[in-house]
Length: 221
Length: 272
Ligand SMILES: Nc1ncnc2c1ncn2[C@@H]1O[C@H](COP(=O)(O)OP(=O)(O)OP(=O)(O)O)[C@@H](O)[C@H]1O
Ligand SMILES: [Mg+2]
Image (cartoon, rainbow over all chains, first blue to last red; front, side):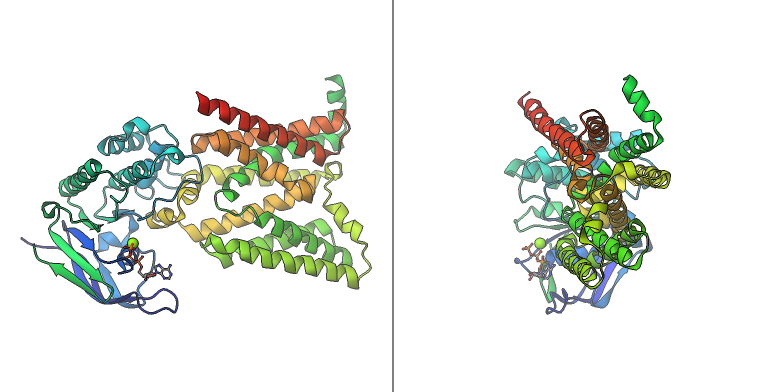
């Protein structure tokens, strides 16, 4: 198979402020269509790695080479590890719609009816459509996580980053969400990097990484 | 009603009415930003900075309102730059500015012969002293705030929902936060002038608290905030006119009533 590199880490190091390196000289490549499962101990730097990938922080040394289409944040979707409780009233549907910001609308360029329909469809995918009109503040932790997944799916991204997206999900939801993510990714040709501590079914992924601050170990499948 | 028309035919009162309604409709919207971003304490900082500016102005014989505005605006700009998007820093930086400007005001008062009461008079708020220029400025500011909410509706919503997410999606957080701080500064300075330092909350804070209680989505939060703000202003104004209460006190009373009603309303809504 002809593999196209989506992005490459070249000897990337990162340290928060003046602390010691959290990540050190990491090198690896993510190819288009990769579905990667990444694990590693608490504090191994997994979340930090995702933050580097989505441009929230910059490497202190080394470079990240991205395919030109990825330079723009439009093609990246990110499900953060912690779903903060909302401080404002936002309907569940709207909170999913917001995942399209910068792609289908921004500033004076308003969201259209079809964007709302798309948001509803994504809620259906995560089986949360009956909550569409509810206030996000009233959802449980697991429900919030499903909405966050819907908010990422709606973006139809080239690269989907998920930081422990199944922590609060029950057993059945967990396997449903994982197969949903995997099938949507295959359908859309997305690359996925998913962090999880669980031993997940290998059939959903084509690469398995273990991160340990200073090196990324790849277990061949 | 006759008396109301008569009262409004007096230019000073008509000016005041326009200024109050406009402030109620628009300044209150700022509350929907400062509450979720935990910037509530910043308004105290800005009030004291305004006080310092006015003290300086009186000492040098300049227009105190103008200098108060300038001081508040520069500090809000500075706060925006200093806090970047780490909002947790805002309150400690705010505390430093608040203490130093209060100290500054007292030093100015001590070394010059400006009577302290003169400064506090400025901040007691007297809407009947509003000049046509003041009214125009309030209306223009009100329109700017509403325009800001219309053009940046989704962006504001995203930042309030989750700043980290907003950043990852590509929302220009830093410029947006700077604008938010400037809008906050202008709103506080204007409310100071209208209702006085102690009652800024009646216009900027309480209507949003009430709306956040009963709303179930963002648009209704904004609309309700604006409506509550306007009701507060109109109610306060009428009370001041008819019962002869000081305007600040009447406005505060009105916003308290709205808060109580919103709590009752919320209890009713959630019991359904
Ligand atoms: N904002 C921060 N400032 C300073 N140090 C940080 C910050 N965030 C994380 N760290 C440190 O960086 C290291 C890696 O953190 P990171 O969040 O990337 O770990 P993780 O692999 O995601 O862990 P977990 O499995 O617990 O989520 C930790 O030792 C942590 O203490
Ligand atoms: Mg983590």
